[in-house]
Every structure is written in structure tokens, then in C-alpha cells.
Amino acid sequence: MLALHRAAAATARTPLPGLPASLFRAQLQASALTIKRGAADFTHAVVGGGAVGLAVARKLQQREGAATVLVERHGSVGTETSSRNSEVIHAGLYYGPDTLKTKLCVKGKKMMYDICQKYAIPHRNCGKWVVAQDDAQMDELHKVNEFAKKIGVPTNFLPLEEARRLEPDVRARKGILNSPTTGIVDSHSYMKFLEGDFEEAGGICAFHSPVTRVNPINGGAGGWEIYTKAPDTGEETCITAETLINSAGLAAITLSNSILPAERHRKPFYCKGSYFSYSASGPRPSVLVYPAPRAGHGGLGTHLTLDLGGRIRFGPDVEWVDAPDDLRANGARLPEALDEIEQFLPSIERDAVGLDYAGVRPKLGRAGATFSGGQGGFQDFYIRKEEGFEGFVNLLGIESPGLTSSLAIADEVDELLYG
Image 1: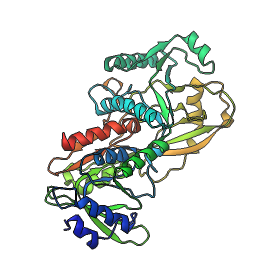
Image 2: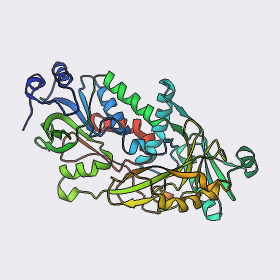
Image 3: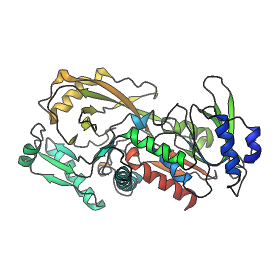
Image 4: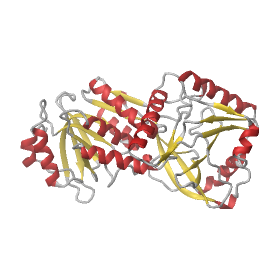
């Protein structure tokens, strides 16, 4: 077991594979002067450099005397789920009462808009329409509207005549629920900001550093040994940290299972979603358009989103897969997606819709993405300080609205550790 003082570690340790030796040793030597307790290399180790891991690392590094390392297996931040999504700032309409998803989405949305405005991160509060084509879908819209009022999220029904004037290409046979606080964000710019702010505060990003094993020292009371292996040389490196935050996204359950006893293991589920581009000049609505939510559905339906350049894309669809490795968009599902899109955008040119990209959602089961009145087996975020493992915070099933919630999730982790 390794639990060396930072000053000693500066000459005794090999740096993480993705970290220059000089920077690693300088950080250890500097940190040795500021950390009052323990003998670990770092106060915090955050595994996973997606939007949530970045936000958590940034938050923890803001604490006085902190020395935080962000351990990422890829060569840059946000290369998995965080960069393969709709880039939507969600309002918090779908996730039911007394859930972490609702609490953290609503809080995180405000924090997201505030930080984007303060630091000129590209974003737009474009709003969203949720459309109903029949009575059953209209019932779902009423449920969403009633819930939104209970949690203080603004929504309103648009008269269909007014909607046709505003967006003549959008069809809604029964009704439209408007969500004025929904928006879009350049997720890459957002994550680069978090990375830069974290490093400016003294945090370290260790890239190309896949975690191979983790060893709790005295149940975590003595800190954590984190082992990584260089992808090119196979060289194994160990660092120690006083706390461990598992924000590994698609690999989070695997890491969790390697630490917790067998009776607390979970099975990972993966929900792949393909996105589709649109090359024609029209129709081009200026608002996001979503179908009414469906109970038990793994996503929010094939919807229309925009990027900050005004380009349209559709998706994601829902495809349950056994592993998260295949990120090719699935063309076999395009006809089904086109049929769904034509329900709310009937004048679309089908031949102008093509494959774009795909993402995989880390799931805790085959539950629905919406609470939908308690039906459909809704699965909440799992954010927990694990009993019996000192200093270990586990973040599992962090799918949508994880991007929107990221800053609020960071506050939640900080509260679990220090509140």
C-alpha cells in the first residue's frame, strides 16, 4: 500500500501516464505545504472528465487547501456522453416529484444560464414546444403542465392559431405546451471553460489514464489508491487521494462494482441513440420541438433540436445495446425516425435527412426517461456517499438531464462530503 507524503512522493512516484512528470512533481511539492491532514497525494480524485466530472472537480478545487486530480481515460475532456447528446438546457419538466433529477435539473438550469452569461459561453434560450397529436398525448401534456406549476417551472399552452402563425411548418393537431426556459448550449465550449477554470485554480487533468483498479485504504479512512495504466506502454502508476468521486459515466458501474461488495453490485444498461442531420433549406423552425412524452420509453422521443448555427438535427431514437462501444449512427432506424418526425413536421424532405452521430446513455435499468405520473419504472440519478467506504461518492446512471444538472450535481457532491 502506498500512502506517501507529497514531498516524498515527488521523488518516489511515477506521474500519471497523461501528466508531464515535471508538472506532477511540482503539484505534489506545492500541495504538501497546504494539506494539513492525511498523507495522500491529492485531497480529491475525480474519475471521469465529462461535464459532470469537470463540474465536480472544479467545485472541489475551490475549497481552501484542495489539491484535486481529474483522471480521464481519453486524451481530452467530454469525448463520450457529454459530447454526444442534444446539447439542450432542460427545464425540468419530466422527472417527477421528490427526485434528484428534478431538484438538480431545475437548480442546474439556472446555474447554467448564469455561468454562460457571465463567461460568454455560447448558448441560447430558444424555448421548446411539446406537441400533442391526439387526446392521449394531450393528457400527457396536461400532466406535464400541472407538474411544472407545482415545481415553479414556467409553461403555458399556446393557442393553435397563434402557433401556426409563429411556426407554420410545425403540426400539432391537439395542443402545444410551451417551455420558455428550455435552451441550447455549446457543450464543448462549456466543458472547455470548466476545464480551464479548474486548472487555473490549481487542479490537474490527467489524460490517457484509464483506471485499472482502486484500493480503499482501511475502508477509505486512510485514503484511496488509484491505479492507472498507460495505453501505449502498459506502465502502471499509483496515486493516492483522500476522497474518490466516481463520475466515470459509461464505465461508472464497472468501477463501482470493483469497489463495493458483491451484494451491492449493479448491472449496467446502455441505451444508444442515433441522431440525424437535415440538409434542406426548409422547413426550419426556430424553436425546439418534442413529441408528447411516452410512459416507459427510454428517451424523450425523436425530437427536433437546433445548434447555435441554426442547423436542425433530429433524435435521438432508442436502441438498447449490450455494450457502449459502437457509436455509429444506425441507418436501419431512419425510416422509423422519419415517420415520427413527419407527425410534427409534415413538410420535411425525407431524402434530406441523413445519419449524423450517435451517443450512449448510461442507464441503471430499462426504465423510462420520464416519471409520467409514476408509470413506466422511472429511474432517478444515483448520487450517494457509499456507506462503509469513507470518502467515496458514487455517481451512477448520470444520463439526461446530466449536462443541465452538472453544476448542481457538483454542489450535491460537495455537500455530501463536507455538508
